[in-house]
Length: 80
Image (cartoon, rainbow, N blue to C red; front, side, top):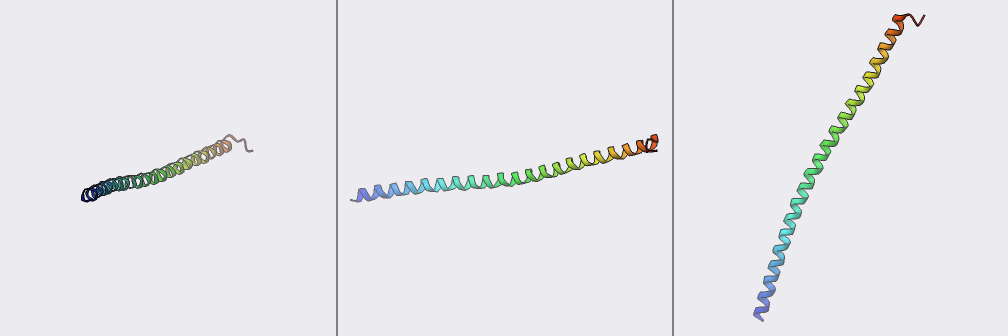
């Protein structure tokens, strides 16, 4: 009977050790996932900023182009 209790105790301790290892790996994976999500948020913010800057650049090009077209239009006298 004592041998069975010892074997059961050893099995229980082995299983708890495995569980502790699994929980430790899960905690590490969760931490890495949180870090990756934070990096993704920064990357998305940077993409939004760059897209906004690019859109503003296109608008400025169009406005500048239109501005010069008006100047040329009036200078050539085509408006008269």
